[in-house]
Image 1 (cartoon, rainbow, N blue to C red):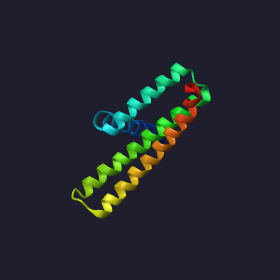
Image 2 (cartoon, rainbow, N blue to C red; image 1 turned 90 degrees about the vertical axis):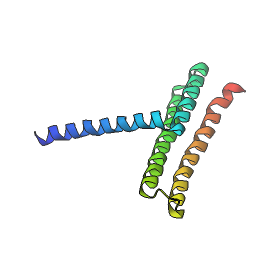
Image 3 (cartoon, rainbow, N blue to C red; image 1 turned 30 degrees about the horizontal axis):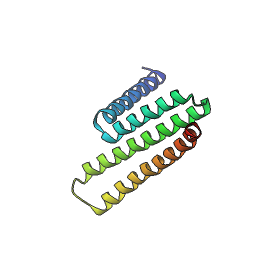
Length: 122
């Protein structure tokens, strides 16, 4: 097998792993399931209110941002629990930081949602 073929096969394998990770997130993690429900609801709002293409881009970006950071947070929590299953101050500190990142992204997404949708409700 040539280097080019090997590269392509490895990339395809990586995409497969990514889809497997996405399936695990969606089927096992409550926080991601809640984020998906919220994403469906705000997508419905976007369709109903006929938001602009720019608003769609921003909304989709915010949904992706929150869900991606939630996924990273979940991975950090799972890894920390695997490495150190017992309570540990440093592990708790790291998990809190990861959760804080999700909170920041969520606050930004909510703020953006208010900016996008408030004119439609006023």
